[in-house]
Image (tube, rainbow, N blue to C red):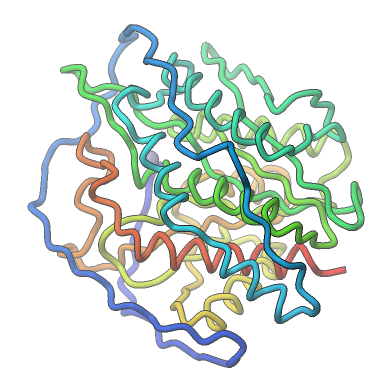
Amino acid sequence: MTARLRNSFPLICLFVFSQLLVLPVSGCEDQQKARVNTVFVPENGYNFEPPAPPQNTVSTATIPTVPMPENRIQTIEVLLNSLDITREFSFLSTLAADSYQGRKTGSAGAEASADFISTEFTRLGLQPWTKIGLSSYTQHFIAGDTESDNVIAVLPGRSPDNAYVILAAHYDHLGLDANGQPFNGADDNAAGVAAILEIANIFQQTGIKPEKDIVFCAFSGEEIGQRGSKALGRTIFENGLGNQVEMINIDGIGATGGGYVGIWDEGFSGAAKLVGALEEAGATLGTPTKREGTDIGSDAQPFDWQYSIPAVTVDWDWGSDPSIWHPYYHTVYDDADQINQTVLEQATRVVLLGLWLRASET
Ligand SMILES: [Zn+2]
């Protein structure tokens, strides 16, 4: 995420209006950590050697299958029970490794990250988004003096090419600091990319198809002004698909503090159904959610503001208490070992169910 303002509302009350799947809410781990003062200082044209080829940390040997569900409730149970936090965290750890050198837009580290994501999409047998003119998973974009790639893949629904729900997260981050230390961006936003890869695995593993196509999208260029999401939003708009698309964007769901899933609709009323689905998901799962405002500055913003394509950004919110803020935001200490896997899993489940609710609507 880029810039955020925080309001000061207390943790919301939770209204559990469904007993469909009531799950325990694990306590928010108030892991007090020493505050660090290192902040990101943009480097100027820092060059570095390409990182070592990434190791695919997920076995390609077998993808276990589960029985097809017989009804809606069973479908939801199968989806949620298929979430494998160990697998998800392995995606996160891979992308947040030093070898990716902070995944700065346009860098070799970012290219290696895109290759890792693309390899996983290939393994899952996903399709290019041909309806917007793509013949591969790569959407190359040029913005000013910067070039990079969004990585995009489609899981066809029961009514293919009719409507699309994009599940997105940016994979780029800040690169290296002046001393060559990588900003690994585990929470910002290897966690979000790990969630979309995990959810892609779940749908492929279970064989469950919602009505709409699901488009998995890993954006580049977020940290330099949402360049990748602006490029995709424009392409969707120019292909006349603006009113057939909506997007759930994930940015920062692994921080240690906070206590609820934030849903940022950027003030766009067209995103109300997305907000409603995620709120329903949170209530069903016993995970607090809160509708936020317009200040997260992540990749939903260009969709909502420039192209009127409904979009929300989901985060694990840090709340207003400085003692539980993410202490490593945009520092070189945002590493995988600081990720709270409990909240990562909780937030991913909310996203998974919210996605399914929107994508299964006829
Ligand atoms: Zn950021």
